[in-house]
Image 1 (tube, rainbow, N blue to C red):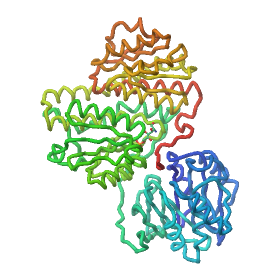
Image 2 (cartoon, rainbow, N blue to C red; image 1 turned 60 degrees about the vertical axis):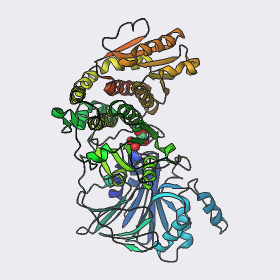
Image 3 (cartoon, helix red, strand yellow; image 1 turned 180 degrees about the vertical axis):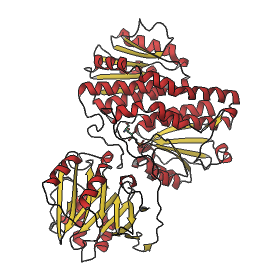
Image 4 (cartoon, protein in one colour; image 1 turned 120 degrees about the horizontal axis):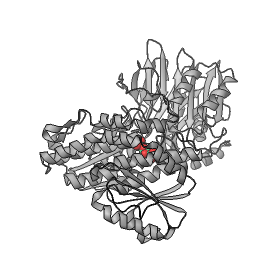
Length: 610
Ligand code: AGP
């Protein structure tokens, strides 16, 4: 996953591309680069590390160019280095290419070109694109690029320039997003992996679909399909959500976003609850009650944290709405040849709306005729264009790679969707009203947990030197345990596992000794006794135990080394407050260990490669 950006127009292409890259850093930040044309010469600059290093390198150069393309990288092929950073070039440095995606047959293409005497300087797959275009170039950059694309397998969002074509950027897409923005008055045009990277809010915008290619010139764009036939594309002026905010007084976006949750949870259910009827409604839901009533099976598709929210939603939809539901890991699902019938609803959950594994799985089920409901936090993202209908999280931009507020907004939104589906079926109005009261109590419960962050901080400092953690839970608390472990893994680089508590005796108990810390997630009353017995088994083997449990739980002192008692809440919603404790715990352990909390190593906020 990477981010690409391009600009052609009267303003400073270098400055505009740098600003665009900063809005794309969530897609990768291990190296970056830019290339442009100046009086028939190709200029370029690359740097390893974050975009700031590219900015510093550019300050030392006179980089006055007529147009530019730029790239921020998340390494797939070839280690993060200035050498492997984009743009990549042909042997004569006439052509520059920036690429997001993977060229799956790059080895075969390199072999073919090597036989023609072409050599390669990087370990990347992307370099082959520049070499291939150069191989076919006879003066027409579009034709040479189309010829190159016809031989490539894999997926791409890419931009190409040639020193002999100072007013032209070629952009192409397959599976990966490319947005193009134009302003005729200012005679300028932009290309990007993400429409949100454009700073201007007065652009006419279009998105390239699979196998489309475009010639982008100042204020104008021509689009062609895979058969090189020109196609008319409608442009739109987009309304954007609130802008990417600052960290305010917080030292990290993660801590700020953790503290936003009383408000973001509130926003997720604002104007969506109908207490009088004990149900919920959604402003954007284009599926009718008849459509929703005809649903006999639900498949949830997602990755990472969103999959954990999907697992909890699957239990909710089965328990409350009595609809058979499975939560599938999208990267596995698409190679399963799934059984889809007309009464199957697919729910695709993605904070960014750009996770390629999830998008590819959505395209797979759509090809089989399924209706797709998106749960997303980013307007105009690819998922919102693929899904039949989308429910928005309204959580505002989530900057920290480690997802926090989006997770609890996903759980809130999915709980409301469950309420709607259940009320359309067997759930009584009174039961619905009782559930609504629990939902409405969430912001205050979360606020009370944030007020205890110093207690959680002290706990984290006490355990920060341990190298192995198990988060154990049952029923709704099992996916919450997976999520707790993922947070700790992501930002503190500690080996942490989430596990169903009842499964420990079937193997992992062998790992228990005084160097292992177990976080007992005891938030579900229905399984509390069983959880306490499982923790007793850990204690018997000298594991360290931190127990998170409802405030009136008895007998914990005999079991746990440390106890955190939380306000009571129904089992169905308990994963929200318990996960926030885990978010803070992971944050303070990472702080103690001095890792890069907002941009952890080897990760990116949106995963646009498979
Ligand atoms: C969560 O902290 C991670 N950043 C990651 O697991 C993430 O949830 C996953 O990549 C899915 O992202 P999405 O919700 O944007 O699709």
